[in-house]
Length: 614
Image 1 (tube, rainbow, N blue to C red):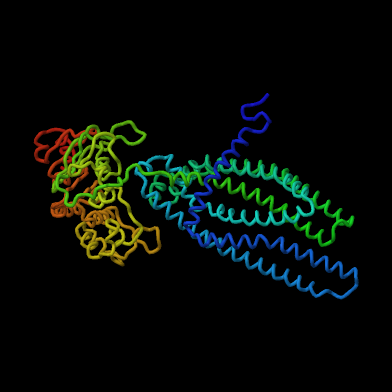
Image 2 (cartoon, helix red, strand yellow):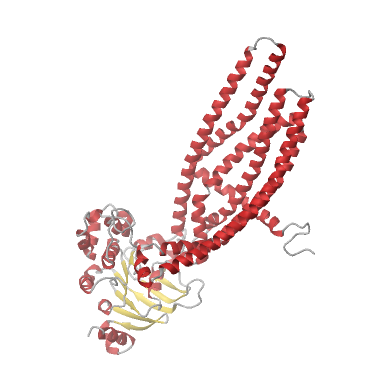
């Protein structure tokens, strides 16, 4: 009875499905060749020429060897002097051997050169494309799996590039050797191909199973990478010791790695037995042809030189046919791995500038208007913002407060167009935000998030990233550091602004959370943008540092629109208007004095926080 996993012929259905998938994956090869040509067209052309010339040397060497042996046998039988042209043939064989050695090293050199160019070009292209994708992509686990595979494929497919060069050389060599065999007997070639083909199918099938298994293991491997970092990182070291987590994390890592190891070993054992049996058929085919040639020479049908030529040609053709099949299969299998990389490059951001996008207004005259804005994150039906409407005018300082998850940071992401509203619209000077150039809009907004980046770079570079096009203006960087009080931190560093920060690289010094935050604030001030957005700007600062920062807050935001998010009422009370968010809506609005007088939600939160200081 035929099972659902088998075809009518008794072969596993997955076998033929795998081959169809593998052949379809060959469509990935032309785009990769295009990328390869972009990375180093000259090296590609040189590699092809060198390999074609090298591919013809085996046939030429066998032909010259045939002439030498026939001349030697003829001379030995006739008893005459050694003919002069014998040494000419020997010299030619020496020349071919020398040329082959030089070409082999030249091919290795060009291969390594091309590999470096391809790896560099693809890595740069991957980084550049990743930077253009929507923020939503990075919050999707499925995308993260694809991105992880794309990153690996960007560097691990060098073997495929070299395999394509070898395939070209193998095909040319095999065609030339086959032409020599065909002159004597076409059936010899047929037998060689027929005997090699089953082994090729078997190797290809197991290579495809290896790809499928690797694909399935991606999420587990991501967990292993996370556990590996978690179990041996500076950030987690304190809690690992205090909570005694090391053994638990190590055991979890061991269980997952054992799972992958067992799967890989099981597949490797199946491949070992099947490949060994199928390879026997190839050996039988080769020696069958070899025996026939010996019989022909013994019967006087061919010369000793022809015997040597055919023996070498058969051995070379057999080996090369097997190599062609296995190399082609390898390319097809590796082409499957390129699917994620090419799909990654094909992913287009949904939030991008229109072809006729407007430049951001300079100066901003009317400000921002949130007009009945609603928003939910992709894959989540919960409305983070629900019919939100407010105005942020030039020179105005607005504070957003509310419990966690009420949409404060989401408003910032919409204002900076990291996301677009699910419903409603956001206007800037009366024009929908989607009509402006996204890149130009970002230049007008200085943002410092609570989870700001700590760049493992020098103090100067850490601040300069706030306005990378002005990174060479040291005076501006120092002024920004002075505004944020980061200058006091930098003054205590051994190398000042040239001090490497963080512990990742040798010679680096780490900072406290408050010191890092001052560095991050300097980035926002360096930007000199028309809009300043501070998301928990003093969360890591002590009380005195916070007081110093906000004593100068009015000066630093003069002439700018400022949007503040903070849980500290000592911060928000300096705003011109305070919005209290609850369930994605503004439930109260006004300045500090008015809101405390009303006795509503704001007043309750203020009293609750103030009571802890009494």
